[in-house]
Length: 198
Image (cartoon, rainbow, N blue to C red; front, side, top):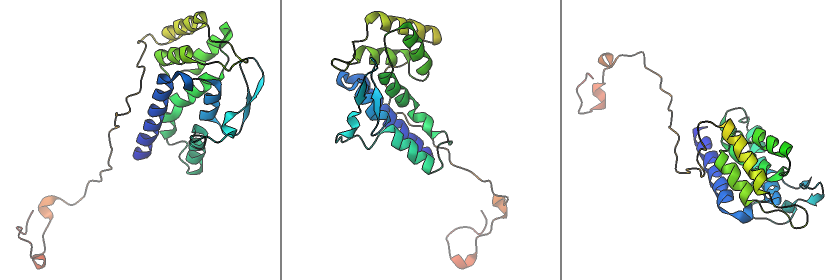
């Protein structure tokens, strides 16, 4: 589980950093691509659009939903390792929700509980609307979301990029022996150059 947790953390951090760095990756279709396979959905204006993951895509088979399905199949979905994917899940959902009204701003703040305010604002500013189906996210809307998130996170804006070099501490199980060291005897038949007593 410890190795799996580290691996999922790396997948989450690498993909999230990619979204934060690449403006062309912040779109409705990429959010669907990250989260689901072979689905259709509604755009921000309510128009049904075909999911681009039905087209051949080198990353289409390696998305969050398949990782979650694998965790469930292996009985690991309640082990806590799935939490490492939550920032990426929320980023994918953020790319899919509507981004226009005051209600939308409230929904985004309720949704993005793990992403830092900086990450949410960065994704909103980089969001690329679908041509003819959506409008660009307005600066006023982004400011309202940012203000709400800052009220929710009084500790500060938090980090922007994920440090993928972070390593979780390794915990090895230890079972103490009931035999005391001074009671151990090394058999002479082994011919070891050690004293017979420890």
